[in-house]
Image 1 (tube, rainbow, N blue to C red):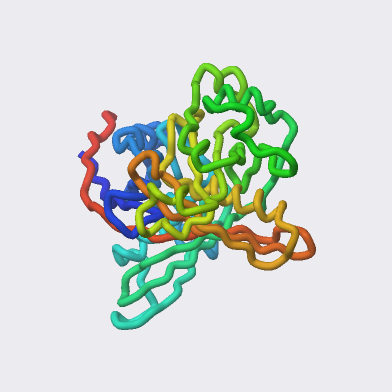
Image 2 (image 1 turned 45 degrees about the vertical axis):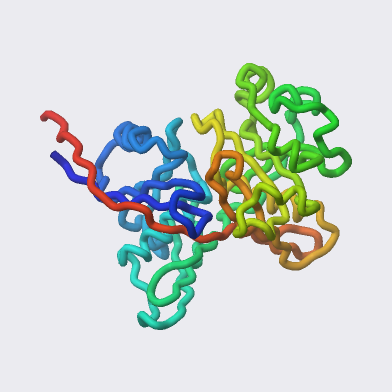
Length: 323
């Protein structure tokens, strides 16, 4: 038998059993991708990461990210959670004494390229992490279905969508999502992916996985939020049927796309920030802090951050292949 160690954590929350679940697996060197995918499906979380020794100078670790549907080049909550676990378990040591505060810089080598992650530590333990995307937002509007088609996909009416400059667009910071602005938080709550319509209108598209969002405008739209999310600016949901994730509780890669989308439509430069509530409808409330640097009308950097908390640690035993 071969033994692998794993740690599970909840990401984009400081409360166990909220946020987005992640399994971080160690000691998987030499295992084929098919086995890594089978392990991912065994956990059955939206994503699982596998951590290896660094392959590129300047990186802290090599990280491969899998959903139950296959390997992906980049994802936000696995990047944040893996960095947290590396520091929380002492595999990457904090540079502060037990009573001090420190900010650490990790670089995770992912399929998209090196992803910088800052980790804030207090009393020797990580409390928050923030990634900077390896790729700047790429936006495409060609091939995006009509509002009528998207209404069919999401079980909504055309009047639930926002028009003008805030029309749906495909955006990628390493993993494409279809950013879909809605007119109200109520429309976000009511959104559901109808798989027959998704197959007809989005399957095979460059950006086929919808992120729906609405600006939070008043207290009534905060009524179902926990105390930790009452200051949210945006309510979002993310559906990833193409990667066997019907709905994701907290999606850093999609929210990085959202930061780029919003920054491109904000008529001012500077560092632009938003607080996003996601996962509420799933009973796993998540808080994501997104920001974009904009200079002379162009987005120069995108960052996504939040808290994480370790939930469990254990071992997995796999049979050795027959020779």
